[in-house]
Length: 268
Ligand code: PBE
Image 1 (cartoon, helix red, strand yellow):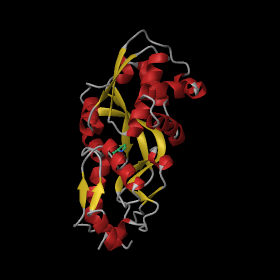
Image 2 (cartoon, rainbow, N blue to C red):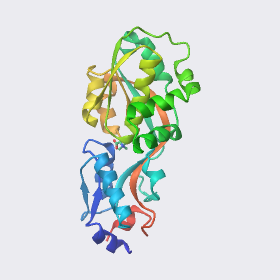
Image 3 (cartoon, helix red, strand yellow):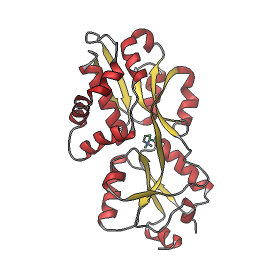
Image 4 (cartoon, rainbow, N blue to C red):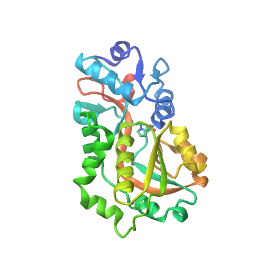
C-alpha cells in the first residue's frame, strides 16, 4: 500500500537484531536522518529477526527488517533492500580479520593463515544455506572445506602445522559470522594442528576481547562503516589484517511484494 499505510500496517516497527550490532546504530541514525520519529527499532537477535520475517512472508504481510548480505534469507525469500539515498548504511563495506597485538610473534602460523584467508559471499552462502537447512555449523563448515580443498590449500600454502597450540576466536551469532568462524576454526584444527575455542559473544566483547588480548582473533569485523565506533575505540590496541570478504552490504530489507522502494517512503 501507500507509505502511510505501510507504517500503520507494521505498527511503525523496524525489526532489528542484537543491540551491539553496527546495523542497529546505523538504523538509529537512519530514523534520525530520514526524520522517521514515529518509528521504533525493535531489539532482538538475528534468529528472532529471521523468525519474524519468515512468519510475515508466510502470511504475505508487510515487514521491515535490518538485513545484510551475505545472508541465506536472500536465497530463501524474494527480498529487496530499500534504497538509501542518504547513504546512512555506507557503501563498499567489507568484512575484516582482526588479530590481537603479539599474535604474529606468538602464533606466526595462525597469523599467516588468517592473513591469507579471503573468500566470496557465494562461498559463505553455501555454508549458510547448509546450516539453515539443518546441518550443524561444524558439519557444514567441514563439508564445505573438504569439498573446496583448492581454496583451503591456497590459504594454508607453505604453512607448517603446529602441535596442538591453543587459539581463541571470538564471534557474534550472526548467521554470516557463524559460517566464517566455523570454517576458520576447522581449517586451523584440521590443517594446521591448532586446538581452537570459538567464543560466541556480543559485538562489544568481541572487539574488547581482541583489544585486551583475551582473544587471539576474530573474522567478524564489518568495516569501514558498520563497526566504525568499535574500530575508532580499539584500532591502536589490535591489528587489522584486512578484508576477508569484499562487497558486503547492510540496510533495511523488505519482501519484494511490498510497494515501497526507498527508506524515504517510510516517512509520513
Ligand atoms: N551484521 C552482520 C553485523 C555485522 C555482521 C551486519 C548484522 C552488524 O550489524 O554489526
